[in-house]
Image (cartoon, rainbow, N blue to C red; front, side):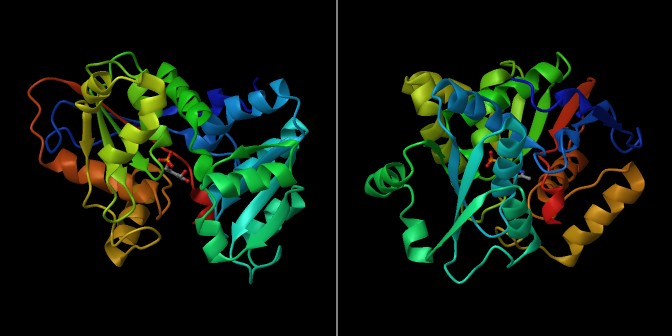
Length: 300
Ligand SMILES: Cc1ncc(COP(=O)(O)O)c(C=O)c1O
């Protein structure tokens, strides 16, 4: 299924001063350019899920998200384009379809919004809760928050095919780990994968292990894959949705100096981690460093 054209996701070369960064070729994979609303990793994560909805002859997707969720908006837009229905279960019973621009847009795109209390939202992954949603909406495929399922991971594997053959270091922001797990599975065994969790105290390795298990089954194989992962766990700027003037200045600098737009929740932090890491490297041989732009620009 080719709803969105991924050829719009170009590889942008970031020119850095060679005396400060010797032997570095830095490329940004601009997945944010795929679509304004199904941007970044969103289309990658949804592609096979949408295919599955058609195979299973369901009416649409039921999924979960917070009031500002990039994922909810992406599901609403992708379903609209695919001629499917969508239901968004939103965290916060006090909210309405006009509480913010994100929810307004989801609603305009035809998404039915169901507002639930924080307590019942927090139970969304429990088996009984999932069964309840399935029973109430039998013609919808349930997709977890953030598109974090097997199909999302498989879709993200495809990104690697659009990168140069030899990538020595690949950087990506991490939330649910779906994107990073896909990149890990798809990339060459010589590529080191650098993950930048945006949540404070997040156990990247444990979360990746959980998601990889149904795919790889064997603990030893999982360990082999995870040996290629480097976690940059101290670049969360206080945690999810938090930032400071230093991060905002960095984002402004990247826009002016490199014509690279970044958001302050995910990609700004991940690119910051990359640049801090680069400053302390001293490569003796040419290295190709790639950064995956996972989008998020519509939420600032
Ligand atoms: C813009 C953006 N970047 C990165 C991520 C993190 O991706 P993942 O949840 O697959 O780790 C998300 C969340 O889905 C996101 O919205």
